[in-house]
Image (cartoon, rainbow, N blue to C red; front, top):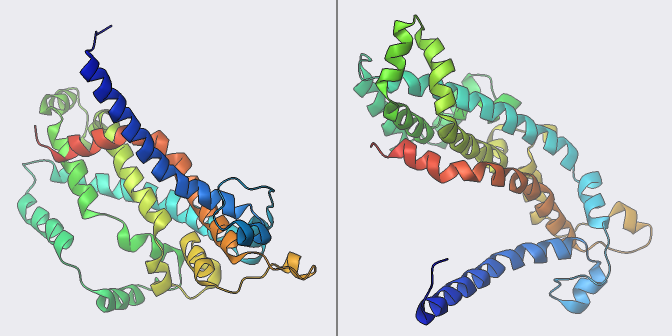
Length: 289
C-alpha cells in the first residue's frame, strides 16, 4: 500500500465527501419522483415533499397504463428505437467506410457536403414538404428514414476507421478478401467500442424524440412514448376511472411522476451496459493519432 501523509488523507476525504454530496443531489430528485408516483394524494397534500412514503399505492401506474395509451406508445417507441438504431448504424457504417479511404474519388467533396449539413439545415417547412412528397406522412417510418444517417456519428465512425492500421486490410486483400469481407470480418470486430457509442447515441435520440412525431403524425395510435408523456405532463385535470367510483381523485402529480418513471427506467437500465464504451469510442473516433 502507498503511505499517504496526513494532508493527502484530508484531501482525499474532502474529495470523497464532495462526490458523495453531489451524488446525493443528483439522486434525491429521482427518488422524489419515484416516491410521489407511489404515494396517495392525501399524503402528498399533507406532507408536501415526500421522499419515503408512509403507504404505497400503484393506482397512478394503473392510470398511466390503462387510460393514457402507454402500452401502444411503448410498441411504437420500441419499434423506432430497435429498428431505427439498427438501420442507423448499418447505413452510417456503409457511408463511413468508403469515406475513410483516401483513394476514394471525390472524397473531399462528399465530406464537405456532409459537414455542411451539420451547420445548416433546410428548415421545418421545406423538410415537411419533402416528407409529404415522399409519402411518409402519418407512417411509423417517418420517425426513422429522415434521420437515417447522422453526420456527427458518421464523422466519428469514419475517424475510427481511419485509425485502424492499413496493413490489416492489405493482408486481407492478399488472401483474396473483398472490401465487404474485410469490413465484416476485420473492421467491424475491431470497431465495437465506437459502434457501441454510436448505437447509444442513436438509441437515446430515438427514445427521447417527440417533435418529429408531433409534426408528421396525426394518428394517436402511432404516437411514441415521449408524446404521450408530454400530453400527460401538460394535462392538469387527470382523474382515474378506477377512483371515480369512490369519488376520489388521483393526484395529478402522482400520475405525472409515474409517467416519467415508466418512460425513463428502460433507457436507464440499458445505459450502464453501454457506458463503459462511451468515452473510449468517442475519443478514438474523434482524435486522429
